[in-house]
Length: 497
Image (cartoon, rainbow, N blue to C red; front, top):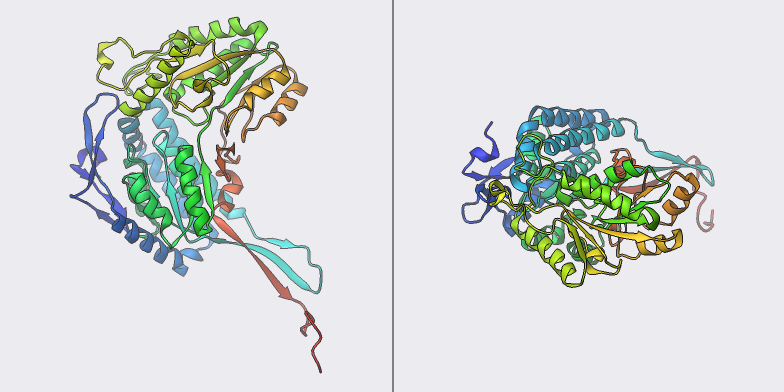
């Protein structure tokens, strides 16, 4: 099988057929080197219509819609097997397209395969419910697929985030049109190939890359699309929510974050400093759950900050496939420009740039979109850099004096995705965790994830949940059924005999 990099123009997938569009394509640039990776065929509005029609036909086919759970589980497990067999290919696609280091790419393939295995196991045992009757009847709740699901994924972690959506939507019995981010299209395309090779019926999963503002709008607004699942920026999520609201269809939105990472003076400070460094700088800060706002109790603020600075300076920034590389480039040159503008804006407002704040001096990295780990201090939690998601290796450090002051600052953003707390006081951990307006709270750890735990945010960080058993129910609609146990009809008004 050819890899995406071997192809002059990478095709996309509709109805089990590979489509090459010579009139419209995406020229993909490697963010680590500035060189062209390859060209990817881009879909048109007509391609979106064809993909949705294909998904609708496949989703309506009783052979797919009514497939027995254990048979569907076998399909998902075969997909997981093929993902691991093609682990290097998938990892390389991601590394070339968004600059993640090789080790992280390989780990994300393993996590994606594990997601398919989790949902395979879940659908083997997840049943309907018998509800308490209030008369001479049997009542039950069953779950049906929505039909056609529009899945729109971002560029920062395409392997895992695409797996989260596709595994759950397939487990629930839907047809899917996947629109991957323009910066990272081939992970989704290769996953489409894997699903076909695993035996998923043609048309069940269709993959169409292209400009979000054009074909993304066409996809969400298509009359046959019955549900939207989007991961990405808050402004685009708001736009999708408006489209979905007009159509009266559900939209699951996993959006931005500006997560508070909190360290109290009684914490294990060494472990907390380790976690604070990883929480923001892993993946070059390109994570919606990144611990981008570090709140440290004032009495240990200088000590903790010194440890985090020491660890950040020691991070190995290099080409993604270099031995021991811990940080790669930003996912695009435009993204680096945005990061630079945010840091420069903070500098002009009087912020202190403790480390970083510029590009690395290493000439080997000069052609890539690299940016040094950066720590900004001397700011208010109201500063723009402390309020706006940057999606880069930039940590905002701020001291706090008491619990009440901390909670007020931590919650004073539009986002509410993740958060972290470090303390030896379990009562305080409980109080603060309950008070934080966030969909996830880590206590004496950070970035611990489980496919079995629901994932999502509060406020402008999104709506709905993915992963866990709720992750299947997200992709299903609820139906109540009532079975009479009486030989006569005894409801409503009395009829003359």
